[in-house]
Length: 277
Image 1: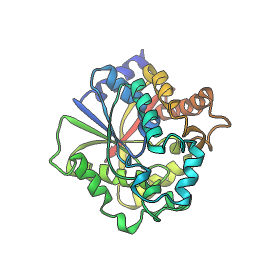
Image 2: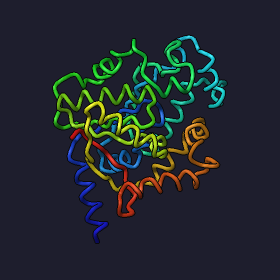
Image 3: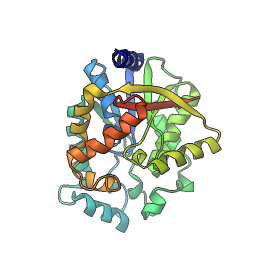
């Protein structure tokens, strides 16, 4: 009975807003991090929007050796990288019931010579990109007065990927302007608990204090979330390489469900959200 009550309360909290917009730094981030929540919204006829922020594609700048290495790992060269990733995102959106919006910002690996290895990609953002979060906000209308009927879902920045940091900063600025913003835990980066703890320490040092906004029970849509994750065939071996021995559905389900149950503290399968305190 207690689990049923908790589920009802979490769903009521989720549906408090009429419009729902998820900010996804790249193709796959929302499906993996909060696909269960997105599917719940779709099941309640709310048609959540997933805005892929860095969807500009590999043609935005000359391809560096580092970017070419990523293409090789993804196995998408013949089809065209951006076209292949859009195809995967479209398949995942069909599974979840989301509406995709593509923004023109190029992925970090296509922004010239700013990020040429993993240490730079998961390090400090380039100094000449200080205005990028602001441009993202403007493109999404988040620089305007807040709309009380909209909830924004932005990445918390676990794992410290530079693109996730930029989108987090856009979400943070929106929250500070009064928008209703829930910050989701970036997965699978969050599966590595040291990165989780390091991120919260970093935020606290910046004077940014977070509290839990909601624990959304996604038991009913967990299968859909897994279906969506498995759509990203080009990415699974790369992004789950630290977490599973093989990128089978069963193994991905095992590590993801373990994380989701631990987040709930009572064994439910949840997706956890944060907000500014």
